[in-house]
Length: 210
Image 1: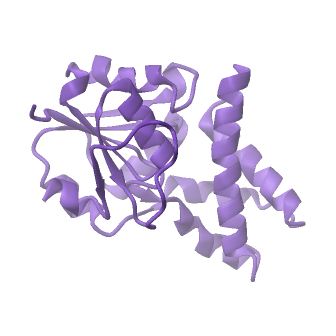
Image 2: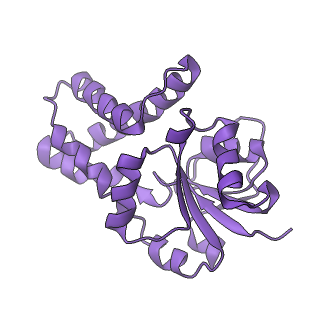
């Protein structure tokens, strides 16, 4: 069955979340990479915890609170200006050209809130038919209703949507829902043991869209 639309995760898939590391390093010499990694880990952890607690907060708040925790854990003074880095994350090298070759419908489906996704997409120069946020559902991935949002908004059957994520838990969440899934495994990570397999495992977006 052919794919009629491609839906992309944003953070870690199109945009390199660890590109904040350079700015972190300039603020905290010798601690930049450690801060960037802990910040991302706590950011994800808080989305899952808030979903389970049914205590949703927008991704911008979650990201700020993850930064506050990470600075405290590493004994660093809080540098609020780091939040702006999430509005100008670097694209992975192949992304722009790969997406420009894509003729079918394309969308972002992200945990990001509109106040973060809007500026990020504009600053990167990418164009999509839809930029979908969990914010309207008030629950985070990998809740199945998040993936259903792409079906409803694009008007395409779930069997005909290709979903692309570099986050294995996200890819498998989409597969559990019934999308056709491409996992970008840039780091040769093992598959998460969640009872599902992606339809394809690739190293970059080029391998899917060429």
